[in-house]
Length: 193
Image (cartoon, rainbow, N blue to C red; front, side):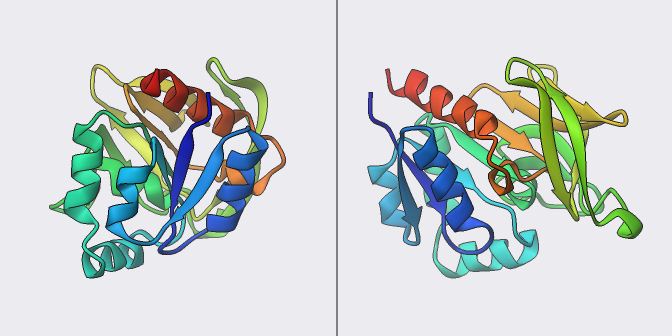
């Protein structure tokens, strides 16, 4: 079954996500206007800078349409800054952005001295040997009871799933390993079916 997966095209590693989605045999659409959300089956919110991305989301009127997209049960995958956008709680901030996924995240949590690094991860149900690329990455400090923890790095949660929501701290699109994207494509296929 052909599914259409949008990549929120306001900021961040958009082209790389498009390439990864296409490598998984799905159609990719760069979403720059809220009305495009009606044409897609699932959405990836890429990495970038979460405060900048939020400003652009406000400017282009994306907040309510994205919440509606979630209400329709459509899958959403947030990577790095995208995870921060999805989270219900952000350490040090009173308000979340979309507040959809029952996790608490901390921004830039791996410290300045290790702003960018790679680490081999074991991701439940996806891969035992996935190389995660971390760039000024956030991490998940705690999860709600119906959130499944998929991966940890040095005891920090770096990937999780809650029903239709998938989030990770790293950038799966910056490698040629498409298994994490494939997992999301499969979530979208199941949801559409």
